[in-house]
Length: 121
Length: 111
Image 1 (tube, chains in turn green, brown):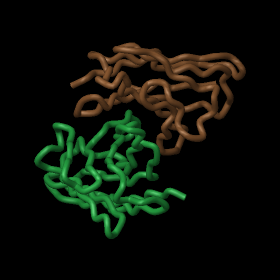
Image 2 (tube, chains in turn green, brown):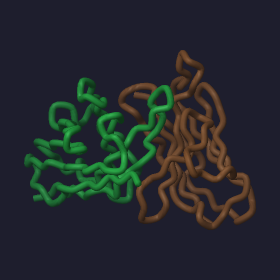
Image 3 (cartoon, chains in turn blue, yellow):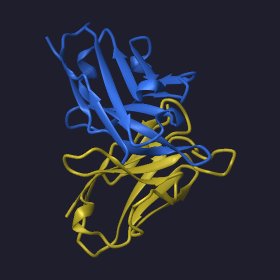
Image 4 (cartoon, rainbow over the protein chains, first blue to last red):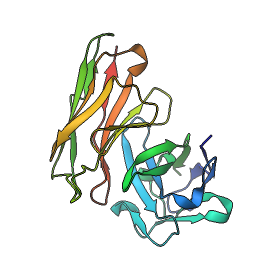
């Protein structure tokens, strides 16, 4: 059974740092692109970042470029999001999601339960 | 950025009746291979989103056949042939043609 379990969320002050983790199981983690998607309280979904299987390609939404870093450790089947210089508008539930491959990237087929990040003084 | 616009934003439905949601993109989502980079997700109350339709018209694994996706270019539609009570939640379309990937605002479906 595919499982994605996020951790590391919590309360952080503006300008602070936080590292989110996503532990994957039930599939060959190293064979899949992975992503982070967030959702502010009561709001819609927002794509944050993608990372290729070997980490050689990473893509980010504009507002987090230079502040957030997506990474992975295939030996540990884990995905990470390093968040630096956080702002109030980064407050969201952060979901880890697996990207399906059917000849091309084709949707987030599995999602974690999410971890809440609250940026506040 | 590619802007995704859904309508309606709220959709009251009756069990057993059909329902449809529209999603329009600010530019064509057609790839050179003929596929459209458009997915549909459902987020049920209190749950994580789940993939319903990928590449415009392909049902994801385990998704009931009452759900169908269609459309081309910039106009896409998600249809539910006969709504069931378990279909309530917020539906999102998302484009993955161009970074940043972008979602529609969401359509809240209520019985």
